[in-house]
Image (cartoon, rainbow, N blue to C red; front, side):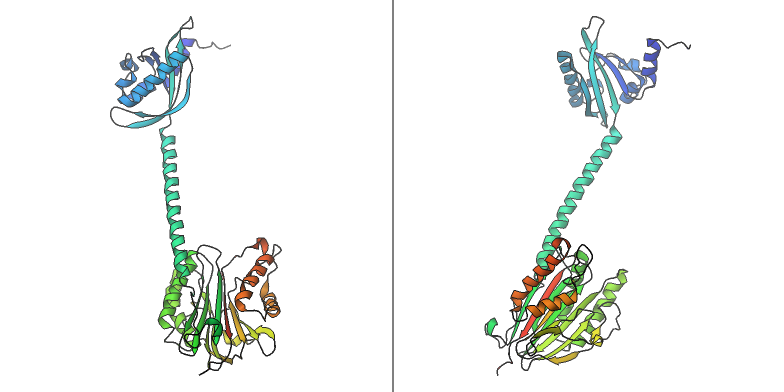
Amino acid sequence: MSEQPDESTLMDQLMHHIRDNIYFKDREGHFILINDEGARRAGYSSPDELIGKTDLDIFTDEHGSDALRDEQRILESGVPLVAKEEKETWTDGHETWVSTTKVPLRDEQGEVIGTFGISRDITLHKQNELLAAQYAEENRRLCDELESDLQMAAELQKTFLPTGYPVFPEGVEPAESAARFCHLYHSTGAVGGDFCSVRKLSDTEAGILLCDVTGHGVRSALITALIRAVVEEITMKATDPGIFLDHLNKVLTPIIQPGGQSIFATACYLILDVEDGSLRYAIAGHPVPVLLNSRTGTAEWLTADPNDIGPALALNAGSIYHTVRTTLHPMDAVIMYTDGLYEVTTENGEQYGKERLLAFANQNRNRLIRDLFPDLLEEVADFCAGGKFEDDVCLVGCRFAHPLER
């Protein structure tokens, strides 16, 4: 059987090889024994050089005094100090962190004659912890800034939507206008990618535009802002819907496509002449509007010809958009919408779809459009999983009430 090491050998191993700082102090806080690691950390070549010194000799007054007060409480109460995390500030200015445990040091009769302590260096851990806290605070600050920016962007985007509608002739009440308009916008986030405008082009004409940028959120909102700026520039210049979309496409394509992401926009642009109800329109990859036909008493698609629909915007600068002409009769109405309205699904993946949309329009064809829109949105929300839309929704309505009286 091998010989067991005696206590002095074990103490020698402990004091010379352990990587924690081990020290014994008398009742006044003087070192009476300290290990090699403790001496090294204090900047001394030998533990003997620290014998008789106190923490005030190696630390700043603030930290040294705190350590001595801890030890006095231990001496008075007999209660150990366990795993206290403390910052050591040294006289040369550098700082370290330790986890410190101190217990009463007793003689053979059980009398408290000093303290015994172990301090483990946790500087790296603490630095990482503080750094993580700084990162967390910086992240919180950035999130707050982003939230503030999003709120500002949301308020700005509201100004992109119509705040009023043209009337014909000028000066009449909206309810007496030869053409009556309304819109409803529902965003899935603070900002979205749908945009609509209703503008008076002349004494008899109004231009109605609805755009839908792929996706939603900040990226889509930025493209929406770009579209609005271009529309402001070209609305009064391009009075033919096909030429209007052609110009919009030529401006957007070289700006959007170099980003390397699949971003595009769909659009539908209508120009109504209230003098005789003539309607000119062009479609760029956008869902076909619904026509509430006063003569047949039904809701139907504005066009059933796929050739009337051009490609989406910003896919190809050379795309061509055709202008389609038709005539609205008194009390006919056109409903424009974005695909976020009908592409919602149930938990089983069943889509609301265009046919349900058309059926709803048929059932409600005799109602005012401004009253129809909120109920339509509610019906779709009740249909879809969780009652939440996955994409932004924008609805725009235009009713030709009667020819303009001259």
